[in-house]
Structures are given as C-alpha cells and as structure tokens.
Length: 113
Length: 111
Image (tube, rainbow over all chains, first blue to last red; front, side, top):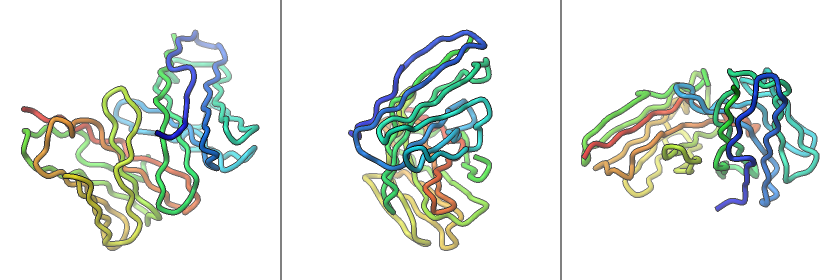
C-alpha cells in the first residue's frame, strides 16, 4: 500500500470554527490532491498541489485553503466551517508519471454541527 | 465533475449477470482512470487507459477507451458479490495531472 495517511480520521466541529486536515505521504510524490465526496456528486476536487508551495484551485475551492510547505505534507484548512462542508474528505498522491495512478488515503469524515 | 458523466448512477444486477458502466466526457481525455470504492473505504485503482481504442482487463473487469478518447466503458462479466461498490471514472483533461472524477456508479449485486 502507498504510504499516505490522513488525520484525523473523524472529526466533529462547530459551525464557525477553523479546521485543519492533514495529509502525509512517505512516497515523495510530486502531486497531492484534496477531494470531498458527497452522495450523488462523486469526488470533487477542492485543491491540488504540483510541488512545494505550488497549489491550484479545483472545482469546489470556495471556503477552503491549502498549504504545502514540504513535499510530504498537504494541509487543508476550513477557515470557518459551515454545515455545507460536512463531508468525507480524501487526499490523493501521484508521481505524475504517464500511466501511473493516483493513490488515495482512507478518508476523513468531517461533521459540522 | 460536470466534465465527466457516468451512467447509470445506480445499478442493481443479479449475481452472475454481466453489466456495463459508461463514462462520457465533453472533452478529449489525456488519461482515463477507473477506481472502485467499497462502502466507507478509500479508492482502489483498477486500470488506466490512454490511447484511443485501448482495452485493458483485470480478472473479470474490462475497460475500453473509444477511438475519439471521449468515452470509456467498464464491463464486468459474470458479476460476483465482491464486485459490489462504487465505481468512479477519473480523467486528466489537460495533461497537467489535474485529476477530476465523475459522480460515480453504485453497483449492488443481488444473490
């Protein structure tokens, strides 16, 4: 299994509080991704990173920010959590080589009450 | 992603039957990925297609990318309970490793 760890795995937080999710990899892959998964929507890309300090927005980036200060860590921050951000969040990594897949973490279930 | 449409969104088949899931794009694909997700778990890579007309198989699962590289189909032969789960197609449209996914197909296998 690819070395990718998400933390925490479960979190309940109150509306308006900041939340940070962490994705840690031991594969030295260049690309890292944050997705959210909601019923009927599949996986939607929030942000992704193509290198240290290099990030770009995905299709549902509003309300989220990311940071990547070193290769192995990609942080997703909800500055002020809202109930609409209740979801399962997945991190993925890829080395960007043609014909290689992205590896996914086990997910973080976030509930905003 | 609106750029990738999967059909059907839900599928219930009897064990032993064949089935097909489709993934359609409005744009040319640089790479098309198929993943499977068991309920409540992470995603497992199935296969990746790049060339128009390419076809790959893994056990009883076959995926094909059409010549124009805008549609892929995933076919399961003689379905088994272990095939149940959510199947997602993903794509890289720009060749920049920005991976987006369809809305998924939930497959249920009835004994």
